[in-house]
Image (cartoon, rainbow, N blue to C red; front, side, top):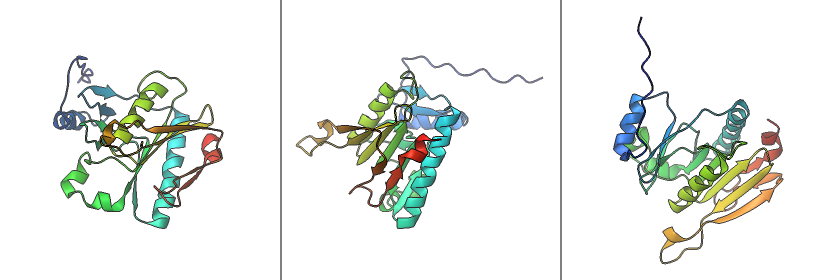
Length: 209
């Protein structure tokens, strides 16, 4: 009888380059992993049923909008992006302008695309603990905005609330500008505004899942 291999335990002080991270992901295709800017490996846990169902509906609504207006590419939570700071992160849902996507080489598109999405969306878990908790997700939203995202939505289904993240005002050192964060309690609709014209998410159906 062949025994299944034991999971690999990595020391917390281990730091990986993006290239090494890609090799680890290729060797562990069933694992859901992310990489911080300082090279630390983050092991993500599977989502619960409610979160998974909401994420599926979210992707469907984004795809309907993107296919209807053209010029956009939608990605689900399995897609990792290599950001300018060296991290590799996977938003629950994200949208990239088609011209930015087509500007990448075929090899870049096959791997972790070296760009930050225009829109990133994260769904918070009921608990604040772990990589899917509020504290960790706020850190991710800050990283997305620092690396070029135009808009971020952090959704709190249990609270029926949303944090809208936008880039700070341009300055001599834009990377140091703090993002603007606006909390919306019980909003009916999320609007993409100038960043993503025509995008509207009806939140009642998302909360009802």
